[in-house]
Image (cartoon, rainbow, N blue to C red):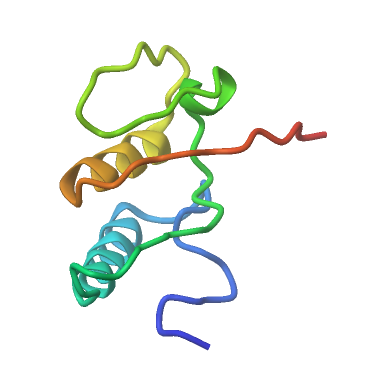
Length: 96
């Protein structure tokens, strides 16, 4: 099990701001360890709500996307992608 895997991810709605900051700090460190010649994919459920997934929009972190439903986790995820110059492609799953 990697150091970022936890029984309850800090991106849950009741996770504290410090937990989320620490999670993204550790994730950024892990991503920066990859070689420039490697392909980097970050997968997971970040509990982010964003119109990027609803419109099936390709988000490259450089262009502004009209996002009226973005929650705090969505803003954090988009900021993370922008910092590391990552693209965000998402799938949309209906929730009960």
